[in-house]
Amino acid sequence: MKQEERLDFLVERFKADSDPYQDVEIPKDTVGKQRLLRSLMNIRMPMAVREDVLQVQDEYLAERAAARGIVQPSDIPVIRNGISVWQGDITRLAVDAIVNAANAQMLGCFVPMHNCIDNCIHTFAGVQLRAECDRQMKELRICYGKDYEQPTAVPMLTDAYNLPAKKVIHIVGPIVQGKVTPNLEKDLADCYRNTLDMCVDNTLTSVAFCCISTGVFRFPNKRAAEIAVHTVNSWMNKHEGMMKKVIFNVFKDDDRRIYEEILS
Image (cartoon, rainbow, N blue to C red; front, side, top):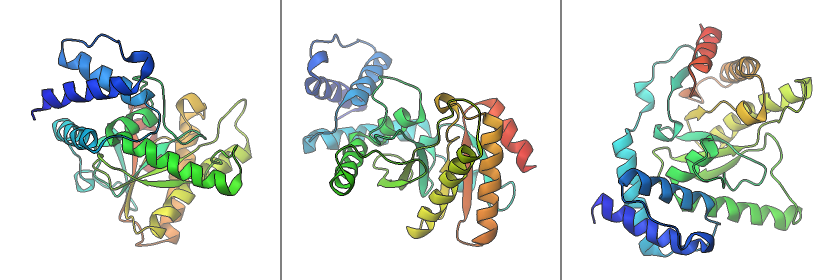
């Protein structure tokens, strides 16, 4: 099956899974069909999927990943103390783990084509990722009650499925609703510290952090970067040799400049 045939197949199958969109018109062009497929994947609830559909999805996403370009940790120069800064799409990184800025429901972003990192990671990992997150949350609700939500700074580890990375670490960052308080700063530092601890516990030696809690969670970018760099640098000094590389992944030029200035 060629890539265009896989795309057509998946659009039809995922459209059939979404009752409100079963009659949606399928675009004629490839980009339009890619956007529709992503949207259908974004809104799809965690549920069973046929093995033949999963196989085609995995083949389709593998080819998309190759076309977009896979970035190896060795391609990214170290600035100091095993720490790097890389500007680009975190879903291209072939590290042991990438960090997802998740929400407390832990199921990903359901907004079609939303450009948040949660949406991007779930899109290019495939529908298996949401299903695994759902399984883990159901198990946690058996222990802690039906209203359980993932607490701030408590990481969850999943497979990465069709991403170049081996694992995804999902973590809920603090939400700034007014001024930045010491408790919020501690919560953000705990996000980085607890993630690194999880990496060590699972023999993961390279990790790429997104900019946790900036954007819609409203943590000021510069202060968030200062906390991130200080926390990671302190952890690396205390755990010498346990992590080969820590990458701060940024998307915006301003964030790249902030991190490079702090690390210089």
